[in-house]
Length: 315
Image (cartoon, rainbow, N blue to C red):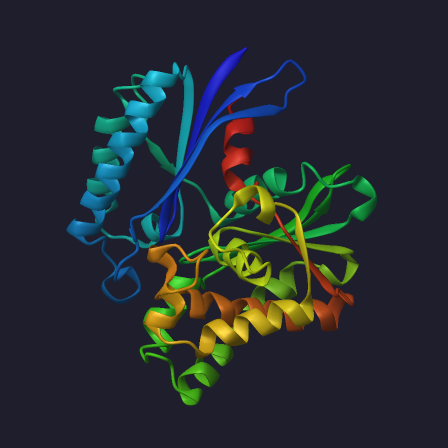
């Protein structure tokens, strides 16, 4: 049995999965963890990673490396997505990852993956526990800087994928400065989301999908709030099914709240408080388009996503 580790470093969060690879090729979780480090702080405006953001990420990665060593990890893979793809000083970031990960597996470092590969890894992780009869699937990975749409099924795999240049951090920094945002800001954010997602819907044939699967922090937080959980519970959230009316109700609520009201919600991670409204705007646009194009009336929220896909890719 091989013990592997996967690290996903996105625009808003850095996440770790340590898992055992079983004889049938599936994964058994040993440890999952997520920290908000906001690596993409200001990247949309400046084109560079902020030194403080790199340091926040280093601190989290050093703790992750310690956990990997203590768990006896023998293989690892770390991928970096939207924020580092866009950064002019990304060499500073990768030098840091070589120093931290090399202490676990010599020569290990983060790698930038394309939006297409990010989408495919998310798809692999997201549909693993869903019945093949529910396919074809459209998997949406709504991150901090980008949103991936992937179409396919469990038999033939991914048929189409596209990474749209929009996420909860990017849309918040660009369109939603208010606390709470004004109706004019929300309207501008919706237009921005629709414009950035249009290319994805042109490239990904969602009209053939039967099931919408949502992954990553915006989607899981929406599910936790819809379930009225007193605190976040990943087991309760995993594979939650929400009607699109329930999705819209939660998103409207989040968009209209101020910072303190969002922070007071039991399942809300502190690092998502100021960007969850932007995530809600994107989610509403997605729901409208998927209902119109594919007749989809339900969102399935999965806790398994790109982390699981990364781990499976190194088996």
